[in-house]
Image (cartoon, rainbow over all chains, first blue to last red; front, side):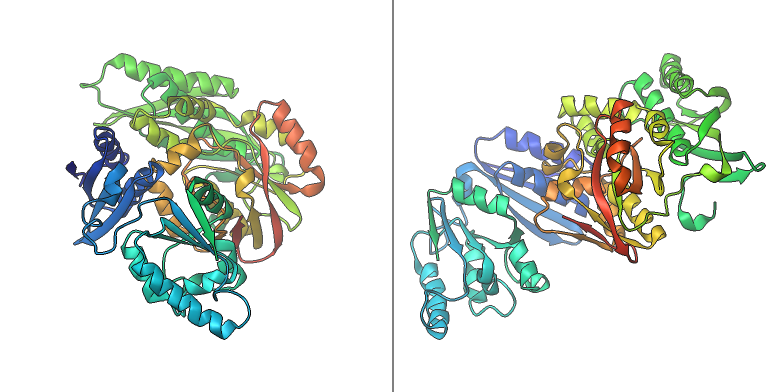
Length: 199
Length: 304
């Protein structure tokens, strides 16, 4: 099920109404909506996100194409085609430090890198990885595992860093991957998960 | 009043006891009901006089109307709405002017008076003050929702709020020490707060969770019913720091352009409770302390 809407030239809240109608008319599937301004794009993304849909955006010659996936379609079809399948259960990782385990931090750094690499090979990808405290050192520019996280991000894993932590370490401007979140969203993500693994 | 203070009305001192306030505002319909639209446009126009501590005396209608394509009764309803608000304000409509236009527009040119020593300005906030808002926020988001036929309960609440005169709030605080006062309109809460902060050379802290919101406003904002004006306001404001713990929809509401919004007051912390009580007793049930003036600065605003 795939719908395409041209919402160019529509004044606010036109694009949101068009998105609402299209998403309400399908149980699951993909709605692609083209808008010609930043405000419409932001508002359509807000609507889709508030309704638990997946969103990806491409920009071309001043127009934004917002691709919204609803329901099971979040797993389909281009993501299923990827060699390593997309999330199959609501698994959340909470990473609270930039090294893995206690004892030697040097060893811990090596282990974290190797862990991220292994995670890429895993058959079950997490839905979300939350980074807190020194864990946020892994999502900033100088992260040794940035490449791995980028790959996970491309495969649909949501990557979120704790905003308070970024502020505490004064590295908010250096965030290189994923979004910023707060404790409410963190708790929500963990409560909604089938399984939470803390590292 | 010089231009540097960014107040919306002009002041002309007649003598030692009386200064004239002149202001004008009009806009296109934001609600379907013409009688409500008339009331809201009038309350919005009158608000500038109240925000300066004044009392409106006379008003003139400013009307644009598609005479051929809309029934004359619609215009009658708009004017009746305006008239009723002007009467409620204790002023009189002394005339006006109508032009033919493809889209209806309505508003008032209002003349009021104020004692020259009692003019309220949007600058003058001092470190140690607290900030009080007299109406809930969210009219921009909710009028956008109205266009989408969504959140009808919130839309109703927004309409009542927009039609409410700032007269009652202004009178309630008239005998208190008010360091700065403005009304919240098109630049949104943060835009008007910014003018106050820059003009007063202070830093301000806004507590996002303390801001009173109209019903449904938060949900409507999170669903993307955010007017373009909110994005423009955000673009314009560069000295605002928003803590990442503030949810995105609340942030959007801080920038949401308001129509006939409430008054924003900067008062000494010591009298905040009394001011708040006086406001609530006079009908501003949503009035709340939403922040504080920190030290001297260049208009920095921290939202947490």
